[in-house]
Length: 113
Image (cartoon, rainbow, N blue to C red; front, top):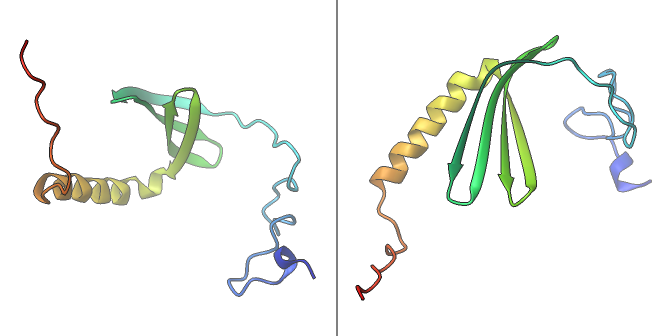
């Protein structure tokens, strides 16, 4: 038996079958889904460029966060039902970043000519 064919103790189907989700098998392209963009915002932080897009499709609303670093893109999607909890955690992280002292010293100022 191949390791990814073993039954999961969590009740999930093996990766390639996707159970009753109706998704195509691994390696097959997914059909396009109509998505409406409700709001979009962009921000650049250091060398990273982030795009926040609130979208809606037949399954519901969601926030897509895309990070672009030198042409490489990574995306996470948060269902709208989890946005309040996501915001609370993010607010807690911002507060902690402001309150907890940094272990790395700030960069030394450049000498004046």
